[in-house]
Length: 337
Ligand SMILES: [Zn+2]
Ligand SMILES: [Zn+2]
Image (cartoon, rainbow, N blue to C red):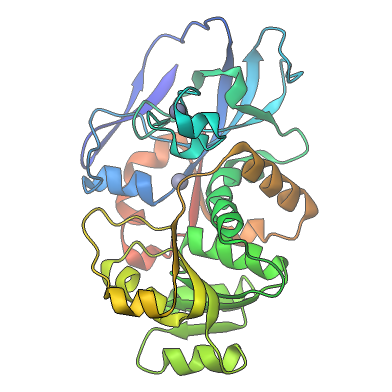
């Protein structure tokens, strides 16, 4: 079977190896689609800290069951499945509390262990979710959209919320659209005009603003003179993350969804005066996946707009070099396996 491995930064290779043998408790899957996100591109560029090579990338996965034993979930051969790529120990205190997304010994497929850029893969059955009602393209979007869903749930966003999302990449757009569908009043911020235009024109986000010295006043105009009840950072950018709470009203919540690999500085009095609830949001849990599957079945999420690029497996080596260029306007690329 064919697989693609990131041998070292800048080098992706298409290789062949024997098909894996299934162990008890696992299902053998054929990988159908792999979504590409910032994590994969950063790993390719070599700026993903703590990343080890060689590594088979791929954590946004749609598969078909080829072999499976009797199981509690009723999964059977031929089923289309989503894969929860967060392999948890199920024993540490956070796992026991149901927070498998931040397990103390978490192993994410395609990050800490080899992922889904291979034609066949064995996955423990509890990490599979039957998704026969969705298309393969939709199934590959469940993971990235669940990241946003998890952050929204953590922040308790509901209809009355005034939400600012900083960063209109794939994660930010997922948060914006899901918050808008919940009935929240949403504002999108970015430093990139093309991304703001995309959020406005393709995703129907009415209030999109460049970050400059007028942004704060523009937010106030949108929120009846006040600021956001919840601010999400989906930029992963140091200065954006250090200042994002400026858009939050007193008593509000600031959620860091993007990841910055070094230290951040905050003026404590600024956070303290607002009695800020500061949250991080990491990965997602099964309930987030289920909720996103319902959203995708509803047809309300603009799937065809979100998927900006689709390629075949053999094109991957040349595509990564194009996608890392900002002018590509990549939101979500899917690789057909
Ligand atoms: Zn991803
Ligand atoms: Zn654990």
